[in-house]
Length: 470
Image (tube, rainbow, N blue to C red; front, top):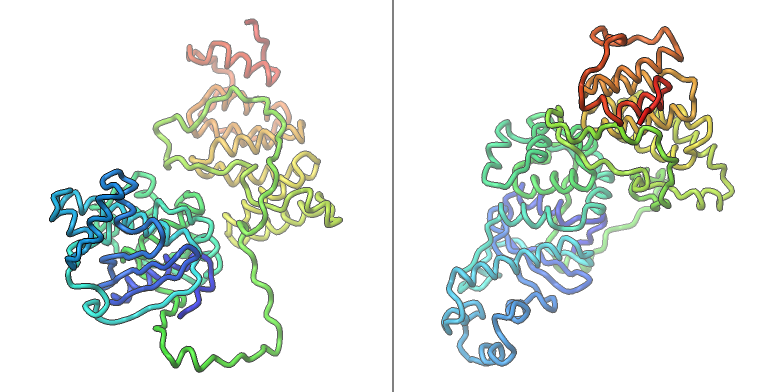
C-alpha cells in the first residue's frame, strides 16, 4: 500500500484521479475503519464503508425508519439482495426515498474520509465489474457530490499545510470556467474568487492573495475545483498512485543517506502554535462608521482574522526560551519588509501581525502598525482593519501626521466626507505639508443631518475640533 506522507493528501489524490480519468478502487485504511471509493472515467460512482455506524442498516436505525426487529428480519432473509433493494421490495420506502437516504449516507462517508487521518492507501486499477457487484442500482453524481462534501469537511488546516508544502503546484482553467460551473450553487464571493483563475497557471499563495478568501476557504476551493476537473495541475509533481503487489512488499527501495543534510523546510505560518488572545487597548474612534455595511464596495466582504486568531509564537513561549519579545518582533518586521520588496504581500502581512502581537505598545511597534494600515487600505474589503491599525499607530506617535492622513484617504474613498475632512484637518495641524485630495474643502460646512448629531460632534471633540454640547 502507498503511504500518504503529507497531511490531507486525499483531496490531491482525488484531483489526480480526476485529471487522469482513472478507473478502479481507492482503498483507505483510516483510524476509524476502512472505506472504498469506486472510480470510472475520473469520477466517483459509489462508496463503501466498514466503519461502525456507516452501513445502510445503522443509518436507517438512526433515522427511525427501521427498528431492531425489522432490521434483523431483513438481514435474516436468505434472498441475495442488497438491503437497499429489500426495503423497496418490502414496501418500506420508494426507490426515490431509498436513493435520497443513500445519497445522504454516501456524503457522510465522504466527509468522514476527508476528515480522518489515513493510515494506508491502496489503488486497485481496472474494470469495476471485477470489484463491484453487478446488482448495484445507485450511483453518485460526482460533481454535486464533490462540491458539497469538500466544502462541508473540516479539513482546512490540513489542506493549507499540504498546499504550502507543495509550493511548486500551479493550476490552470479554461476561459469559460464560470460557465462550466453553472450547475453548482456558486455564491458571489466564490464567483469573484474564480475570476482570478484562467489559462495562466496560478499557485495557492497567489490565489490566496488575489481572492480575499480565508486560507482554509481558498485551499478547499482549489482542491474542489481540481477534483471536479475544472482545474488542471499544469506545474508541479502530482501524487503518485502505485497499486499494491508482491513486488512492492518484497523489494524495498534502497535508502541512500544524503552527503549533505538538506536544509529544514520553511514551516507555513499555520504550523506555529496558537498564541493567547491579545488584549488591545480601547480605540478612541470606536463610534466611526462600519464600512462593511456600504452596498457599493468594490470587492465582496472578507472575514479577515482578528489579531487574536493570527497563528504565532505565544509571548510566554518566547520569554521561556530566554528570547527578547521586542527583538523577536523587530526580526519579524525586517523580514516583512523584505517580503514586501519581493511582492509577497500575504506572507508579509502575516509576519507584521506576529510582530505587533509580540510587541503591540512600544515605540518600535509604530512602523509595523503603520505598514499594516498602508497595505490594507489598498483593498476596500479591508478598510475597517486598515483604520484599526492606523488608529493604534496614531496612539503610539501622537505627533505623527501620516496615520491621520492615511485614515483620511480611507474615509475619502469610502464616501464618508465628514470623517475624511476631520482626519485631514488633524494631519495638517501636525504637518502643514500633508497633501489632501483637491475635491476636499476643509472650510466647507457639513450639512448632512445624519452627521450633525451626537456621533459627528463627539468625533470632532475627540480631534480637538469642537465640544460636545449634548
